Image (cartoon, rainbow, N blue to C red; front, side, top):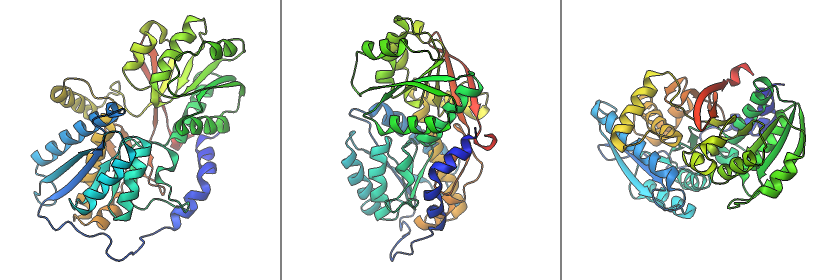
Amino acid sequence: MNLKKGLVGLLAATSLLAAACGNSGRPGGGAANEDEEVKLGTVFATTGAVSAYGTPQENAINMAIDEINAEGGVLDDQEIELVNYDYTSVDTEAAQLATRLATQDNVDAILGADTSGSAKSALQSGTQHEVPTLSPSASADNYTIASDGGVEEWGWRVAFPDSYQGGALAQFAEQELDTEKVAILMDNSSDYSVGLVEIFEEIFSGEIVGKENFTAGQTDFSATLTSLNELDFDVLLVTGYYEEGGPIVRQAREMGLDQPILAPDGFGNQALVELAGEENLNDVYYTTQFTTLNENPLVDEFVESYTEAYGSEPDMFAAMAYDAAYVMRDAIERAGSDNREAINEALAETEKFEGVTGTFSYDEMHNPSKTVTILELQNGEPVNTYEVDPENL
């Protein structure tokens, strides 16, 4: 089995088209900000249903820009001006605010949005006005894929795509947990969940003995889990978010289902412990974009600064946003200009950027090529990490 081969096979057609896409050369594109300062805009949900994702991202970017300005800014001591907007967890508002940033505020680049849906909406506006648009956390496979199957020329991200982590979980199950048989419980109302399962099934060489569905907002999983508990399997894969993941883990453990549970990064929230109960979170493994368990001075400094500024440790959303701010700073410096087109070209040339979420370069589909970290929980506490390296798969 080869995860890298599987992912390439899945996205081969779009990658070939993307490689052929160059600068569109549209009239009026890539206009420079005529203001004296470098100006960046953000679009995050700091109120509404998904504010738990947007608020830490805006916090981390504010902190990063303060650090950058305190160190002398960019482009010969120019400070970065930051324009922040709250799209109130409504995707259409994300698009409208991205348009406002591009046309009225005349920003040089946009950071945001947070969920894949809102980020795609914001990117459509960024693309229309030819503004580099970098989402810290959009993970849907199609975020960087344009309607014609090619690459979104002005779109970038820090998060690895959903299919990427689905393949990593498949490899981890086989190589680290010696898994031969897997049962799957998936949120069939979520593209995120469905996409993960598709690539997991493509990469996993063992047997899928059963597959059951749930939907977002569901709270009682007893009937489904009872059906699964009658099957013979080594590992349970649960694809979804912590809101349903927590109750699933609790109910599974309470009925005696004690096999290891694998999950994607949607489990990555402290509320998982409250919903599942720490006593039930044993042998639970989920992918994460960031962990404080990494022994890295850069991570330690970030965690200390963020905790001091905001009163709590940063989560993976804060970490991805922090990296996004510094990726953009790096691109502006290498571009030697606040010209939008020059910044976009510099983003394409990003190689071995060292951030708190890992070291990565951008591939031809504007996705970061980075290791996937899998976090192990015992008694509700993270106790170990595993890394799946795409270069060695």
